[in-house]
Length: 173
Ligand SMILES: Cc1cc2nc3c(=O)[nH]c(=O)nc-3n(C[C@H](O)[C@H](O)[C@H](O)COP(=O)(O)O)c2cc1C
Image 1: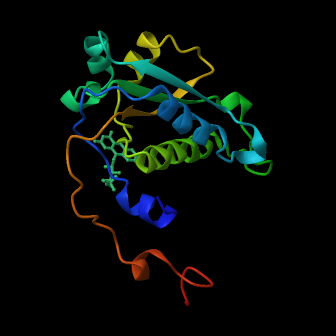
Image 2: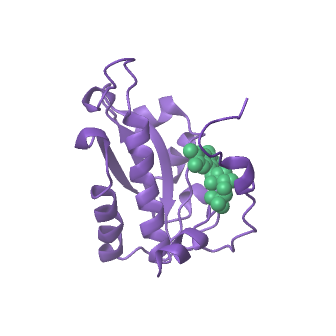
């Protein structure tokens, strides 16, 4: 698919088929995350690929939606803030930004393969830590199911570019 097509076609999929994700497609999606840029190339992230079969009850403790466990796979994207680049002057840690780029690569690579994803940030942090046995240094940032869509995209509702983009400076005043 053309890149312009992929970014139009990606949408938040909230219904999935039980159809398995082929290993080579999972591999392609994961390779796209590996190639994501990160600040100072620190790559301060880890992904946990979770097979949902038999783990539905546990996963519902992390995010309680029917569709969350419908896909054969759920991926958890974790930051490792202690390994991330930190801006010298104000100590801003960029691990969340790095993970966001990684997840964006994941969702777009998946869409290219006609696989569905949905960013999930509204999860239970404690349940995620416990169930996935995360070490203290790892911070789960987002989850997404990965599977074949069983729904259709709705209209893309977005602000107009004229509202989102300014030129030269924030305001003329
Ligand atoms: C950082 C982030 C967190 C999100 N968290 C959730 C979530 O917890 N649950 C959910 O159903 N959708 C979640 N979404 C999906 C957004 O609601 C969705 O991307 C947005 O409404 C635009 O729709 P689209 O993805 O179909 O284009 C999240 C998206 C982003 C980028």
